[in-house]
Length: 338
Image 1 (spheres, rainbow, N blue to C red):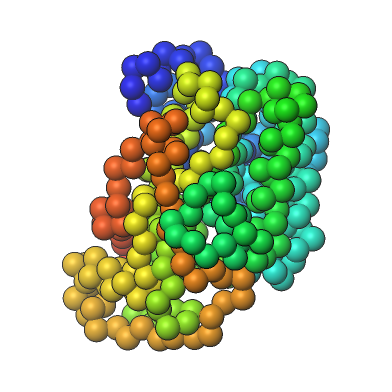
Image 2 (tube, rainbow, N blue to C red):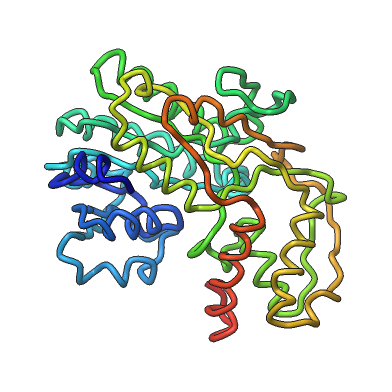
């Protein structure tokens, strides 16, 4: 974080919804390192208390246990906040297919509650987690922000609705917003145990346990995997930008390179084999393609570079190295998953 950014945030209060989750806790940690006042709102439906345990005795950190589906909880959390980083959501495509009603309640109704509470509290800027799933069936690569297709899952619908609501709240109520379309974020504290665990933590745990990961399809599907510290960087930039043209926009957040699932499995085996050589001999299995999955994902990050000064430092290789090291220490210690 630059001195200019620190000066902008000095004495300010930042509300992080979903602050006990994967991305949210990484944001809490990064901002607390610079003595910024943080309020965390979480209902611990997917977030973990262990994720924020190190912060609980920090005088700049406060926890509100509440649910974004309750407007009163949102209003309590927003009171006195200068900025909001909204990351509370149900973030799983398969989960949304199984239970679209709950996904909509959290991701749409909860999002609207947060917008209303932020507007009423006089929040200066509302930054929210959007999603690459918004591109839907649009096949062109790389993905460019103003060209999207039809959503392929209930989750994708909810994240697109978020963008529409954010735009309306700016035009109607002058609440400044920035949407960040995340592309397959990975890194420390990402859940390995959920039935809907993301591919990287799921594969890491399976390989450490000497189990064969199952790739959905033939392994040719590709993703723009994005290390979480790149995500932290753009959130800080979105909080502190003084470029008025950067506000009330949506941005791709990625590295700008794509990796097939087959290549990903190979990279994970190579990194984990440094700790346990037998892992390199574990077979990779293949299953059916997953409903709602897009075949390929690759982001153009030019808009974020130009308007938000986004300069991602970690590619798939450097990000996986840090991630695998973190998981090895924790998973191998208790063999329970994270």
